[in-house]
Length: 259
Image 1 (cartoon, rainbow, N blue to C red):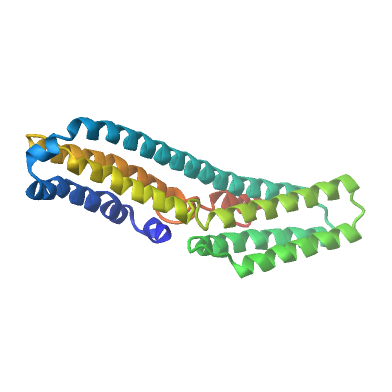
Image 2 (cartoon, rainbow, N blue to C red):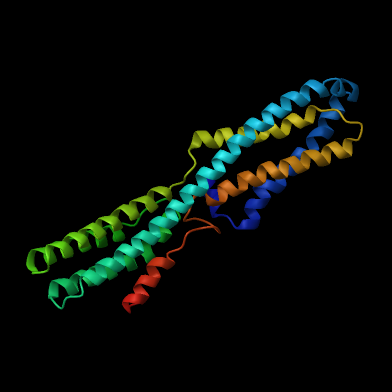
């Protein structure tokens, strides 16, 4: 569900996650007032207010925790892409020798970057990975191994080249993993269940001015579901309107002169 919501246009997601729940929440006090008399609701305001304070704090902590974790993982995905681009530049600089094996390694590196941009990113938007990019990465490793076996380059250069190649693999695995979503299913149950209970709690307060109560419930609903909207928007870092693009890798190809 979060992948579906993340892939929708901004305005559609806002309607599903903020507008419709808020409209339903504002109708709640009216519906309850039709079934339960004002006097019966008002009699419980004091104790209900205390309980609502506890419920509100607990849910606020849960929501804040989820927002912080999702934002940190989103930043991790962005950092992984930048690290992958940096490692690619380092490998290209380390293989500038005119030997055929070095030229082949650079060509394999360029091909991998093109496959990652053209194939990995569209697949990550669907929580998948590209087989073509996997093959291109295997070919890059094979080219680097041939270079190491046939060249007279200093061992320190070869060691650094393979270290940077390992960095590419690790960074790619991080972005592929985070592309599948950050928030686990059980936490989604707590977030949406807590939102419904927190907003629904306000239905059972009794105020003489029903319009004012309805408005306050709507404001609370907007705040709560806006938090959920933020989480959904960045839960899949490579999907939807708010996503991490392949620009760092594209800039690397431009730096190579093959963009």
